[in-house]
Image (tube, rainbow, N blue to C red):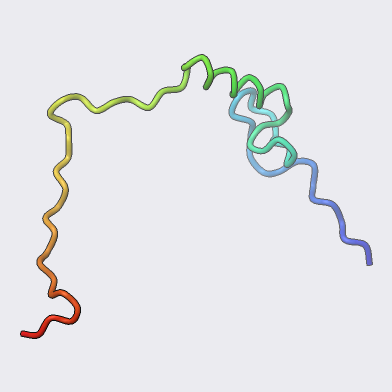
Length: 72
């Protein structure tokens, strides 16, 4: 029994043009849309915003746990 190839179209839509995705280029529909996305990253069109001063979250306090091997 021959194993069937995966479907050419995966579920979901291309984030660039909205067409159905292709498993070969997932999550995109084509090489062109994948390249458009890469170009956007390289130009700096996608950025992760920095936190403003004063927005820093404090780390929760670390509980004092007994050390392994110590006797009480």
